Image (tube, rainbow, N blue to C red; front, side, top):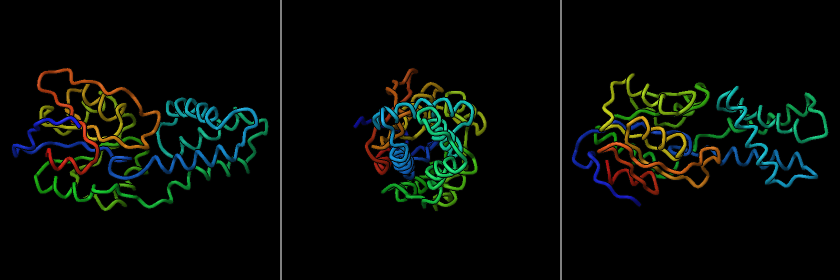
Length: 242
């Protein structure tokens, strides 16, 4: 664990932009189960499950460009992967079956990660200004925030198409945030930590064992004087720093 003395430890309220999926609640475990069921259903005779997954990863990258994130994009990627790998045509019946692998994810209740609720209560008590910042289909993400029971801790919910440096700068400008006391907290190097640092904000990396493979990336280093990067192992450790 990387330890730094944060302004929050000195009693100065901070602005905390907090990721949702796999930071506040479980998410990718459900996608992984659906992918495993899809691969089993495809039962390819030439490609190993690992090879099928590699092709699905590529199709998902392509689908994100045209369909963004969310269950519709995921369902589209599964169907396109089936079309590319199967000798069997994609009939309406097969499409419906494959879609079911994706859309059943929406049926899962929101599973809050251990220690998150108590930590948010602590941060609220310290007068930190908290905003959910997530990407994906707005209706899906807002629904999860509402169903989570955590909404009362947040001043706002920002759902963006992509979490890149421009998005972070836009949110900072929208709310008039001071970069020196603004932190992005999340599990994804690609979407949470690196672009926030690029945008001049501070960042907290909270790893998750099931982080989506497309979110993997080497963690960058702070690039400006005074900028901070905090690495912790679990969300509750935020209580030691803020």
